Image (cartoon, rainbow, N blue to C red; front, side, top):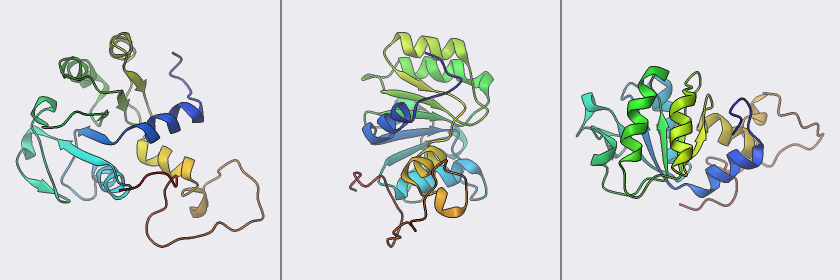
Amino acid sequence: MNHDSYDDAYISGILNAVKTIAIVGASANDVRPSFFVLQYMLNKGFDVYPVNPGQAGKDILGTKFYARLADIPVALDMVDIFRASAAVPAIVDEVLQLDPLPKVVWMQLTVRHDEAAARAEAAGIKVVMNRCPKIEYGRLSGEIAWNGVNSGVLSSKKPIMRSGFQSFGIRQK
């Protein structure tokens, strides 16, 4: 697969299909991007499991930190990697040991490792690199466009704002 660009259908298909997400490299520091992603995805109705050995056993936003993927007591649909690219091969090794295998390995902005991605894809796992699920969810749902970011859509219609967080409209908590 070409990982330089992704069709919107590929990304939205992933975000609509997954329910359980592990965030490897999640931080308890509320000014870190991984904290924002964790909070956002929880608020969108995903079941999110933060993975950080230094925080294992502690609570964050009503969920428990885990030391490693194998410690998470549920099957994962997606593993979101918030670590440097050099750490990706070892994380993919850990992913490939899970049973059942997750549907998706997602690498955050600036994170890319083509060889590890090829190994995951060879095992039947979809891969996204150098993207943020929070940004992609917001972009595809139209949420980001409301904040003045160019969505590529010209319209004179004002979006209908509902209370709480916006969603694709199909995810129910």
